[in-house]
Image 1: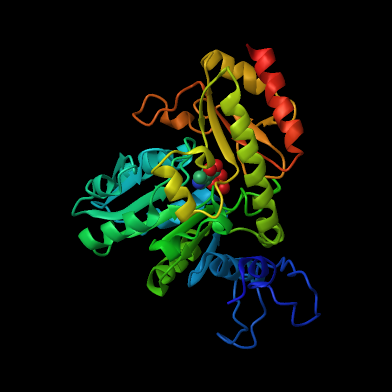
Image 2: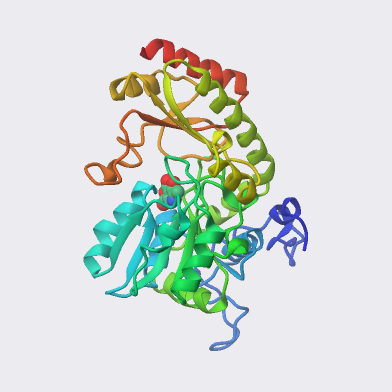
Length: 381
Ligand SMILES: Cc1ncc(COP(=O)(O)O)c(C=O)c1O
């Protein structure tokens, strides 16, 4: 099996057999001429399948070490497909710190369809798994979590879940880590989810999602859902994600090294009350970070001592860090999760501290990024 750095460039993307084109062509077609009724070359209609999408799906399957990859029009569409595996009466056990949009989909769409959800801290895997019930069909993990950047022990949770609840599916949202830093299927998970909008595409120019499966049976069910619901990405979007993936490893190395320096700098700043970053974690999270992840990632969260109003002033004062939702791109982004990405958790037990600021550390010179944060602290206090 080739190594990761080779897979990102070649997996699923052989030179085009008809022309030798090195880059996967954008098959901008909705349909395909058939030789006779039911006689075709593997493609009938582009909602069902498109060669550019196939290249992306095969590449993602190889990177996550899965049997199948399925690409979707957004990360939320990918989570929606996973949730469609459930039936009324089923229960989902999820981590208690997760993307606000996932929480909204669970609570405002699926809870109304007869599926119940509960949320628990993953800090102690045995306590977390003990919250599963006879009706639990899906365990939903995010690691690092969004926005508090806590880690779930995927291997231990999957092991305990499978022992006590055979047949339960363990899904991991691997958007923050990417397969370069962490491979959940190798640790025992059944499904990996990605918002490909983020690090995989890496350039803030596309919205997309993906699910990668460990077994053929679940992949087959998801393939039917993907075609039936139809939330598929267009060929140009697939091309953009594929192009971004080619540099994933080198980008992640830089995101991680800069995030580590930014986190260490924030930790020294007097106006900062707390910094959340797996690279600064204390045992047992530190030990888990080194066991489960190649490096601690490019996301950093922190809380200002001066409180929520100062946090708003801070994010409005940065110049290099753009005030924007999303993450994982070449440019640095900053946001206040309580008011932005996680507004849907307001007033719930999952609500986020309004003084918390989340950074997506980009690829600019790290000295410039640190100077930008220093300047923002001066002007906000
Ligand atoms: C961890 C995580 N999962 C899922 C999503 C949803 O992805 P998308 O915005 O591509 O629909 C996001 C979006 O921010 C996210 O951060």
